[in-house]
Image (cartoon, rainbow, N blue to C red):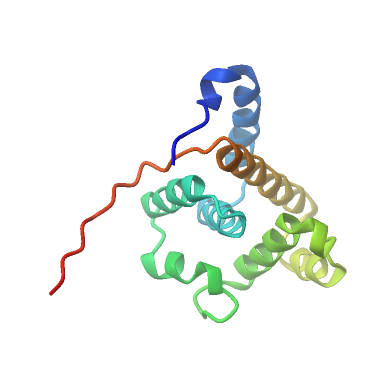
Length: 154
């Protein structure tokens, strides 16, 4: 796949504004591990290879385990996530798929058991922001920096 353009160069002020939102979320008090899980899960839903690659690498740098990253798309069946993380992941799915889910009340009510009002707003902005990045990366064909490893037959 070939990138359609370098959106960082094409609209630097717009990218700067989106990055400023990211910076605010980083200092919002949400746990770094939670931020990376949310970014990765939304990117999985949207099918954004560029962002999945970036955020799984970032998650590992912040101490996330391989097992939790491997099982993220099946988080409901995996006993590796806290109740707070589960509530955030359910909210991530509901907000990312907003046209299908309309952010159901039961998902919101579970979220509010684990997140304050400010945290709920910050989490929702985080989800909206990663969805914006996914749409930029997918539509403008950002290519992940991953290198293919040759597999040899045994």
